[in-house]
Length: 274
Image (tube, rainbow, N blue to C red; front, side, top):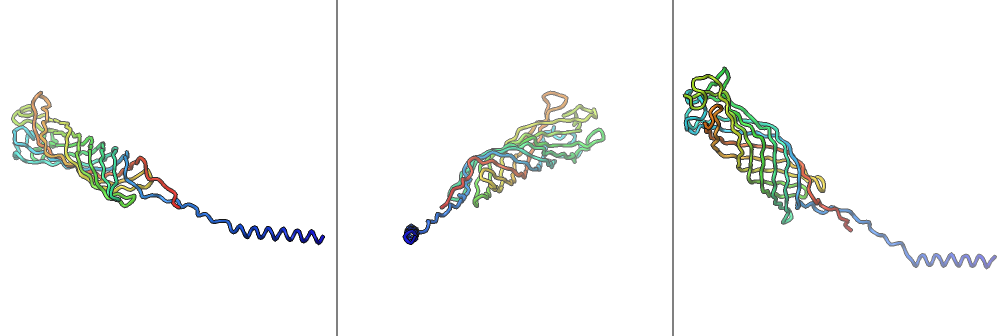
């Protein structure tokens, strides 16, 4: 019995000594997951909605046939009638960006915007026929642009300016005018003279905006754009006689404010940092 107890004690002592020689189990630091700085480099596609307003100026070029009825009521060549309009807009955009020198971003983009911007104004020089005023109206069916942009980023926030070429499709109407000695409508017959013209126009556009990347592949934006379409001579067709037109010089400015969302291809990866 005494020998058994001595042998057991010796085994316990040997095990303790071996554990002491092995030492404590080493500690391994767990990896820390960290996101790399967001990069704006890459391409995107998205959509937008907003509102817009326009200012359209109709000017008599002094050729004797514009503004039917006006020459008999005090208007003179060069007189201008302004039409203000407003409405909702919505569309899509796509583009590509490149980030350089840490914080600077350059890019190119294109967009297409459907529009309900429209307005109407009474002719102050002519009272109209059939008990109603003579009116001029303007409607913008769509807007489009091809622009370059440059911006400065604070990680996921980008502030930018843009500029380029703008396009639009407009419709202009002259309603309830009547004859000027037979030059435009039926001479001596008190019937309304309504005429319209649709035209595609090319101009310029500038804008500013801010974009926020709220997820690796998604960003939201707020943007203001100004479109300028310089004076262009538009020929309004005679409603009764083929080949007879009335030329009017029309200048237009359009402003829109829009909010949008983009899906950005690629995104910024998340990496493990030790």
